[in-house]
Image (cartoon, rainbow, N blue to C red; front, side, top):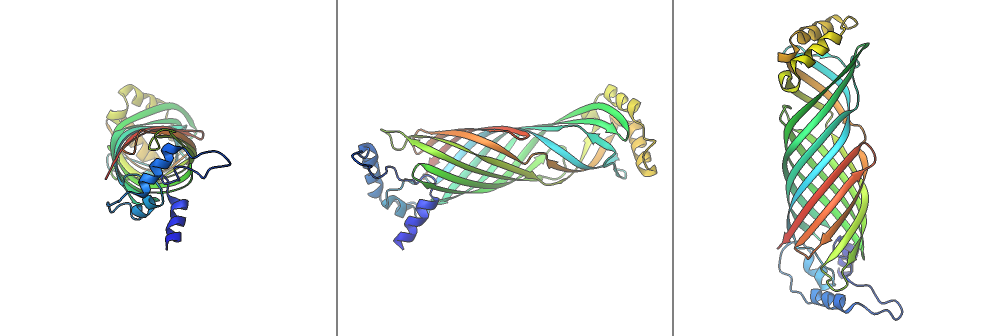
Length: 331
């Protein structure tokens, strides 16, 4: 049974890598690290979580304090593809204008502050909840309606709140670690009727550099990949008076030529365009993230087992992001 515990910890414990390695040749073990490891082995660990935590300490593994709270600032800018569009006006019938309305590069920008409570259930398994509020904006350039070129762009600004939960699997051998994080969030946007679910997945591999004189203090660096998917269907209403001026509405009226549309599409479009600046647009959009994957790099400074700070950036692909995180742990 003891060998099974040891195998699990070696493979899966993120923050439980050996604090010192076996000596190579005449190289001596760092006395600060040896003293710290000996103190861990002598610890009488009482908290329930993480399960198997006491056994981990007895083997000289350093287990993170089980409970944590993390305020986080998150910025993200990414391209969105709109694949299908249904439009109606003032609660009336919707027309399928997919292929009729053509878009340029639809860009979404989000700034969110979240609070994340978490607990290490096992030394290799962390579960958490997350709640946040922030702002989001979408720039939607309409390049054509039918065969009629159109140089028009509208920007929507709105508040967004979110709730979610996630699970992190973590593993390490010595100073090298690997994490796999999965979370599901539901974002409620002011102008959308229903909360929009989003699934996030990220994988990180990195190295922990332990302070020579403070074994509980370290700097960790990593590289990885981040993936996000959104539910494809979005249903909502937009008051055009909130997103465009009368001059912008007139510009659209002057440029739109609906003669090439079907009779139902033409009637719905013309009825809405006549009073566009005061109309409420009812829409159904099928959308997807233009590039679900991008690369992430990050660094974390652990001052002690209670306080850690993290910076992570995302780049490449059609998404850029920034995360600033402060974590406080306790038991």
